[in-house]
Length: 470
Image 1 (cartoon, rainbow, N blue to C red):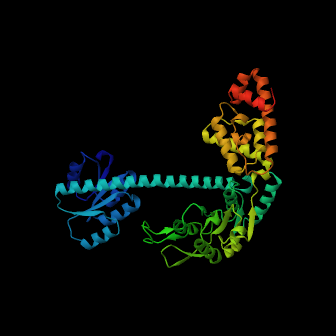
Image 2: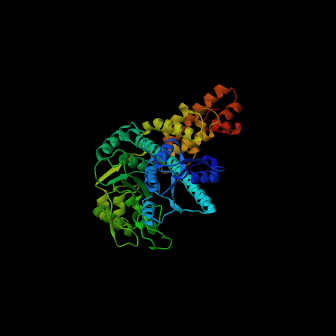
Image 3: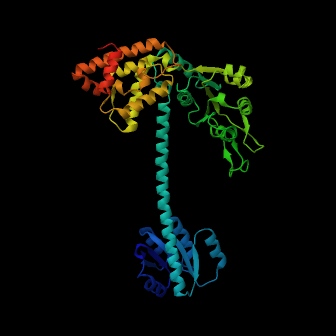
């Protein structure tokens, strides 16, 4: 290991230099110089690890030499040999960083060997630290590039143009969203479960001037009041059992950005009071703290409930309702825009294929027809889950109608769905007749047709009898 390190000894007495060479040449690469200028020339040409200079030399003192070496080779470990007790000058040099340490003449050989060994270790440690710092800096640059790329990807993913829908209902929604994106107004998103309220909130944030700051989300119905208060407003250390350190809340995290409060109707009256204060004043307190704090976060709230009815029932504060209801935005359910279902279905199909690592599948026309006729009480989320399930079950390259869930076929109770159950069942029966006829024509007999449809022969016969196909 030692032969990888250069030692440079500087002294105006040749016999001392020879003694030092004999002591260290077996373990290190040793160079010597009899003056400061000669030593500087060697340092320029070589990667010096440790330089040890005599303090009193003609023309240039050891300290002056080491000052110049520091500028030339900042990583080299610098030491002084001196027979004089010029302590003040040496201490000044050590404090200024020009000199690592000094050794007195005459020296004990064991002490000198130990001191040089420590200096080499220091040099090696410095070199390793420099290497690690460079790696860390490169990793930081890569992380920053990745972060910027990810931010660009997220911003692109959540632009209004990326929300899928070409129906008239969605065109009206896009028109409203573009108008409100850069306003300071608190927004209230209204819509059934699964319509994509969080996706719309993200699109508003990433289409606004606040997109460089954080977008944070909290489902107000997911936590009890005590935990929700800490999550939104933060807490002081010791405020409650388990509060071992100060913690920022989401309103602080989202300062200058956006906070999305989903299911706001699920909050308690006490929490509604705190939310009203931060909406009105932009001010809040951490749990257990007396110091008021401020946040410039824009609030986007959402609910699937009728807040006016909640106010009349006494479950939601009227003043908070009016504060939130400045600009309510209704997101239409999927059944009101069935023309968007094919677009969404192909999008979710591609997404499910990427997630599962499968080659991109296609949806056959019969499956699309079934999807377009189904009312989707779970809205966009239900459609996405249905396509993910179908991709997992598909044996080949096609998502066929028989892979869809029984409820899509109308074989489960659709009570509560919008529209006439009789008309829906009649449409489904017509589609079943069509699929069975195609399967029989393609396969030539009932056994193979049943297998194609994912049924037993007996089930197929019973279905055909019920449908009047005997």
